[in-house]
Image (cartoon, rainbow, N blue to C red; front, side, top):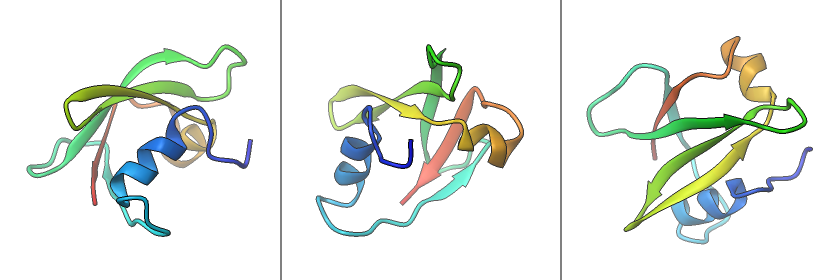
Length: 83
């Protein structure tokens, strides 16, 4: 579960323009100029959850593992992010 899988790798490649590094600022509160990850459904093995976000003209689904719950104390309905 240490690997970026199930859509998170594609999401980070998109944000980094296929580069080697990207830095994100995260918030649980809406912020102007930020994009949002929206909670969709729990992971079948009860490890984190699936979220969706816009990538260009299409919606992208990605998995955030249970570390998200460790960091925030729960799996939030929205995670706001900015590059």
